[in-house]
Length: 138
Image 1 (spheres, rainbow, N blue to C red):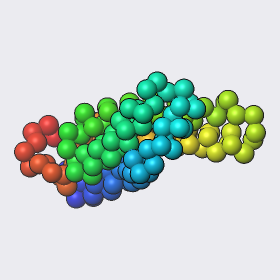
Image 2: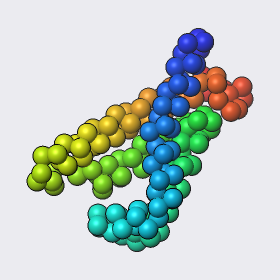
Image 3: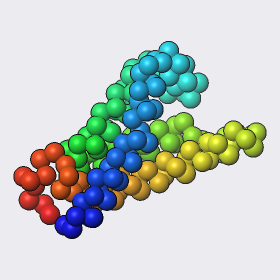
Image 4: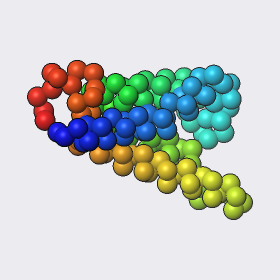
């Protein structure tokens, strides 16, 4: 791959991670609030799911940043974001235009994030990733 292709893959991984990591930190820093929110959303076992969601939103971006296990990371991240989107950003359920619009923005942003994970699945991590020299796929 060319230098700029690898640079674009690195920047893309960083930008995907930046969208997810702060949310995971916030979830784990406020487990009570996260659990309460998940309870309101009807998530089963909200205590355990709050911890699991926070941990996923920290671990998956770290894997993205390092470029480790790109295909697995892409599938897990895309799947996680899809479930979170369908659970937490149901804009069609809001009657007030302001909150509905905000949830719709979050919903659409997450669809774009899922699209980014699909590109990552196909393109891989590139040369600027941990263990990139050992790869034989590309």
